Length: 264
Ligand SMILES: [Zn+2]
Picture 1 (cartoon, rainbow, N blue to C red):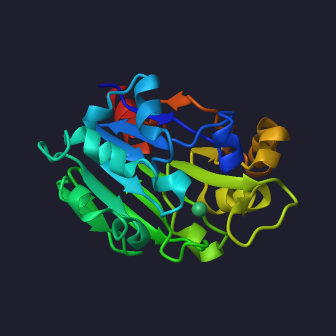
Picture 2 (picture 1 turned 30 degrees about the vertical axis):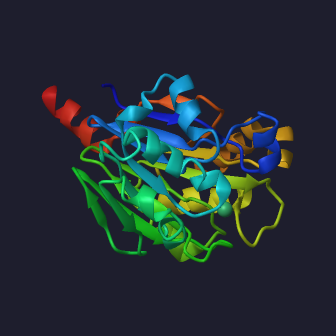
C-alpha cells in the first residue's frame, strides 16, 4: 500500500459540515501498512470509504479531544471494524475526555483504549505517538506528534497558540495546523493565520498544512492565507481541501538521505 495522508474533512465549524461545504471526517494516515484515522468527526466512517479507503483496515483511531467534529465517528468506526465486537482489531488513543466517554460495551470491542497524557509517548506497532498539551476549551485536548519509521508528522489538534507548546513540534517533517481563524482575528481557543506563521517559523517543517477552517475563513481565501504563511516563513504551505491527498514519505528527511546515499 503506498503511503498516503488524506484529508477527509477540512471544515472547522458545524455550519460548514451541516451544509456539506467542507466536511469534518478527519484525516487518514496510511504508512507502513498501518491505517490511522485521526480525529474522526461526523461522517468520517462514510467519507473514508467514499475517498477510496477501506475503513475495515483502520487499526488505530487517534482522537485529539472530545468535541463532536473530532471524535463523533470513533464509536461507529470501532463498531464497524470489530463487526460489533466479534473481531477486536482497532486500538484507540484519545484524550481523557474522549476515552472516558466511550461506552463500556464499545470500549470492549477495541484491542485497547489508551488515554493520552501530555509528554508520555504511547507505542503502537512501529510508531510512537507523543501527546502535546493543547490550550483549548476541552481541558484534556492534545496536539500529537507521530513518529513513523520514516518521518515525523505534527498535528496541532485544536489549540490556542503557545510558544513552548509550538516548540514541542520541533523536528516535524510535516506540520498540520488547525487554523480556524483568519489573519488579524483573535481567539482564546484556536489558531489564527498569524499564529500559524509563528508556529511554522519555530518548527520549520518541510511542509506546513492549514486545515479546520471557520466559515469566515472558508469564505475568505484559504489559499491567500496559506500563501502569506509561505511568504513569511519560506516553508511550503498548503491550505487543505476535502480530498487532498499527499505522499507523506516524499517529505521524509530520512528517506531523502538514504536515496542520496545510493548515488554516492
Ligand atoms: Zn475543539
